Image 1 (cartoon, protein in one colour):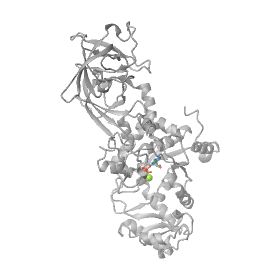
Image 2 (cartoon, rainbow, N blue to C red):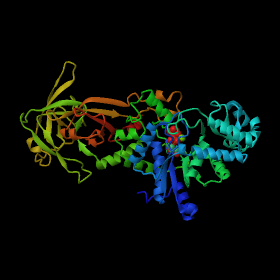
Image 3 (cartoon, rainbow, N blue to C red):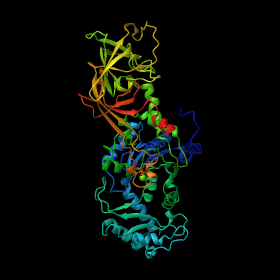
Length: 555
Ligand code: ATP
Ligand code: MG
């Protein structure tokens, strides 16, 4: 499939570079997560892009942790990020950490100072902001801008030694206070932060800023194509300036549009709030747009890769409909998931003319979409469970399911006719009575009866109980991150419905966490890690049809 489509704009750039022998025709990309949260579907887009570019042009991809911010980072995140990338099906050439370059990056800063291109500034953040001017007025600079090289070298060394408190001094690059690009107006490149780092411990109390770490790390690794999201466009001149001034490997930065999905928030900061404030059960809650959440929900790696391929790579910000992601998993599971019977809202059905002590093993096709999927057997007896909604006391005209006097086929079994029912004191139907046509068995029906509807069932004596978690969208508005007020006030109160006692066919007792099925007529489900020997727990991955599209049309 990927061979047939046109090249995206990044592939065009890389292909041209390879053809022209730029960097000897080699391609090295990197995926640079900050280990301050779990990866989400937006990161998957970046992963598929970076690894995909390298694969296509015989290159390699490094996994580089952008761990220059000691306060928010953690090894738990490092481990989850590695697991998620591997699960998505990609292998990195090298596992690297920006923090491993701290000494080298420090030396780059010293080099800039020696060349008169960086200075230690004692100003407060407010003073620095004012000294930068405004977009329409050039900056005037601070009194520290003209410190001598010797003084700067001495102060920077003492910053490193820990002689100053957080915020007391910063190191700034001396670029251009009149530049129309505010990022070029003497950006801060080092700050003092007396904080423990998850890898370097207490050996550093000064840390490089993003702009003085990212490009330098790219260059140290000989990254040829450094791909990032659009908000870094204004940083590119600075990226190039540092590389030129330091005369290091000429990595180049390219930008693409980040993925935004409807009904979803994607920033790690917001996702962390959902976790910390317990709106969800964790980073891997099946409603989260994280890779681990989608995996637990039942998404496959292939469906996520297919989604990333389908959305392509753009130069302009846009919003992708989450139903496209749902479409991708539905399409795959339609081909691969075995069909099984599960009754989510059970009511008892007694077949009065079926022998009470008889049990038949009915044959059921596992997946009509897959000729190699084989068959299984289903025990059938005189007492079954069917869905409550499949019976109506007073059915309207086009109701092709069960009701008094109505005939319906029980999937893989017999045609039955509704006869009568019993109710409890509250008026709820407790038992339905029906008769069956002995000559109507699936595969050998000789009755000639024309029956419009087919419903699913399980045998009461043979069924196992299961917990079924029906997940829906976590937010009830299209763009929760851009609404008035707190994004958490737009959480969908019905994003999870738990069914404690669903009945499942006995073959499902063997199901293991991660196994995926189509519950006939109900949707695609996967076995959750919370399953126990006593009770299987299923997560609804996706419904059979896009129910929200229908809502929108009605609306
Ligand atoms: P967030 O805003 O969610 O915290 P981030 O950009 O801070 O994301 P990083 O860990 O720095 O997260 O991201 C690693 C890589 O993934 C970066 O190259 C970044 O551009 C890319 N990335 C992050 N979010 C998206 C997204 N929504 N779509 C595409 N790429 C993304
Ligand atoms: Mg980032």
